Image 1: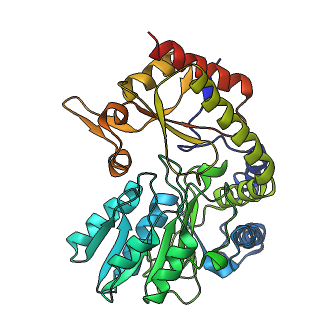
Image 2: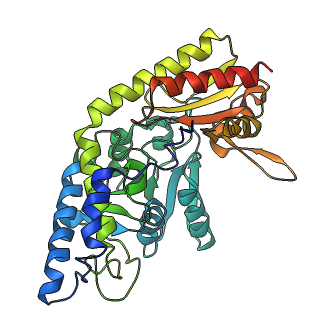
Image 3: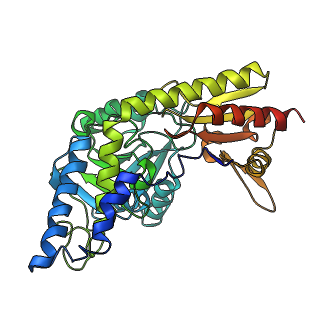
Length: 371
């Protein structure tokens, strides 16, 4: 029996999304940018998908621009904003590498970057942001929810503070879209990144929300698609699949969340009942089912491989190579004691996981850690 418990990494393509994609992979394969009648259906589908996605996050259709995924959206948000602006960027120490590496590129181009520390639960506090803001800062980028420990940031307050200082606010919401109720207008964000395969859509497609009025340098020049901001023939099938998956996720969010939270509680109760010595990382406000666990005097990499041999797929909070073992930058940033930090794994549950699978995961961990 195979147990998949790494939904923060990727998710299975939703059946409805797959079925919605199929006609645009073979029959309706026309180029939506063309003027003849064969382009009519793809063009209509593209328009409808943009409207669907916009409605799911409280945006206007013209504020949604399609990308190849979260990494491109993050790169574009940062580099596109700062390409024609002098000044600095503020981000956090626990961002995804798509943000952190983009910031390093901006530093090489002469932009200053501040990396804000986080609390022991992985929260960027409003006070920390206020302390570091200045007239020189032109962009603040703080992730909506962390991919490793699941912590949800106080985005609305952070965005409001940024705007009070005349600063553009971007959020990497790759882990949050489709799993949390999001309204970009109420959250007051200017830019938001999302990726379809995190909410049961296809891989290789995502979007960037760009608030009307925000000036962003184009990502790719060419045929003028996506309002002249990102040239290239649209991935109609991928876009349709993403829109269908997101609409489904939003419609079933409450039901799925309740199920996932019940599984999460059961797993933690089982591990505690077994007497295992571990720390649950992250904040009380976290993505449902994102469970970062650090076991005392254990090896996270070894745990991952042992679980894999038992047919259980999870992720680890540390990265190892042949010459050294390095802590994840997120685990390091929250200041976890070394005796726990190196024993970190991430179990991320989805709506398809079952109670039986949770009990098997718990029993597997007890077997490994008690050996």
